[in-house]
Every structure is written in C-alpha cells, then in structure tokens.
Length: 128
Image (cartoon, rainbow, N blue to C red; front, side, top):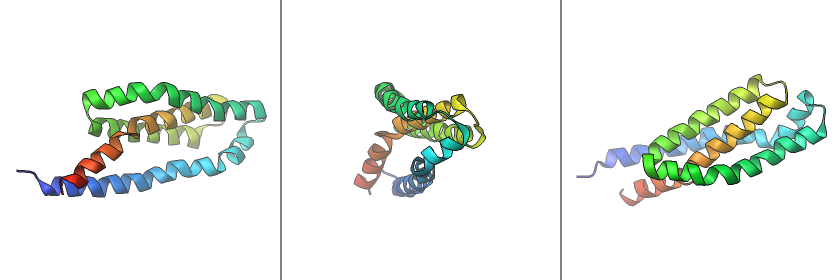
C-alpha cells in the first residue's frame, strides 16, 4: 500500500525548499554591485562570474551519477548543504577566494538539485 501522506509531504517540502532556494538566487541580481565593494579589479569580478559556467559543466555529470546511485533525497540534502555553505561564504567573505568558493558551492548545490528535485516532485504528483 502506498502511503499518500508521504507523497503529499514531499510536495509541500519541495515547494518550501524551492522558495528558500530563491533567497540564494536573489544574490545573482545584486552580485556585481556587491562584489565591487570588496574586490577592486573588474577582471577578478569577471573571473568570478565566468568560473561558475565552467563549474556547471564539470559538476553536472558527477552529481547526476551520485543522484542515480545514492538516491534523489540524499542528493537534495547535499544540495541544500551546499547552498548553506555558499551563503556562509557570501556573508563572511571579504576577498576573492571566499567569493570564488561561494560561487563554486552555489553551482555545486544547483547541480545536486538539478534533476533530483523535478524527479521527486513528478513521482510524488504521479502517485497522488
């Protein structure tokens, strides 16, 4: 027998976490102005904006394999751990390296949740 409560709870939790994830991506709107306060070189700011594109390409395949092997729920949990670490780097960072690590954890978190979140939501809606 399928426990409907479990799947309804999944839908609620995924929507709640998606809303919280929006706060992380709100930073993308103001990141250049924010980075200008701490970093004087526009070439370093450009590098901070270019590195996540390469990291996204590199992280997508291994994180997808991780989700397939260990499960979507663990992948989503790691995703939100990475988002939390990302926010800590952005809050306490004052130089190039912490911001670079923050952007890398942001992309790593996005890679962990990229297919797992939609898959879990689809499965939960399909079985309701």
